Length: 290
Image (cartoon, rainbow, N blue to C red; front, side, top):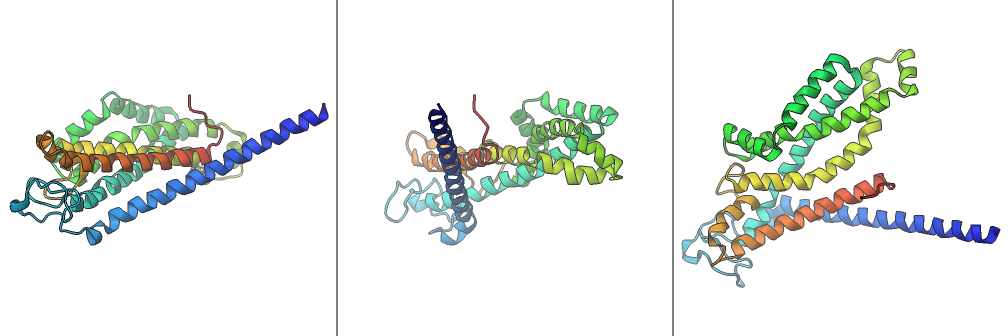
């Protein structure tokens, strides 16, 4: 009987060790792929074979060849160079948006969850107002009012995407502030600001990091969507979403105009989602997807 119990325990330990090892390997691989993706975006202007905005109508809509690996667009611009340089606005813009909405959402959520009462009621009503509108539709309206451009697209998406982080921070703060160690902190003379900085935020940081990493890929798709609608990056700047918009008129005759920027978006989102999943599994090993 004892031997069978020991065998079961050994099997359980081995399975746990395998799971931990697999989680670490996935995390390392995802980090390396993300670093590679960001590095390509940053150094793209220096490694692209042509100027991504250089026009040559004599070679417009040329299919792939030895000189132009992805062919050319309707203005004769090298598509490979434009795909290389088109990632920076989408990826770096999505990182900026997620950073902004995290700061805003955590501030509002922690403030309402910790103090409660009228402050929480007021902030929750503002949150509910934003949640009453479809996020992307509201972003399109705000971007249309502010005008075209990447900066305005970032502002528009930041306005509509902070609610998720505010709700998460609020719920976690409410559960933490009821714990006995928070009461002990108040009795010991710590101010509300000190309690929030030293005890509330450190205890919700894990869930926030997981949510942030899982949100970058979605945000990138939304930036590309605004650019596709003509509300994001403006020509002649290369950006994957706007390149899809430019190429959709030639979908039947020159499919490479849509194929390559579309594949770039898919690959980038897959890498970012893989990073988010790996970080979630590493920080929350008990997570089970339903």
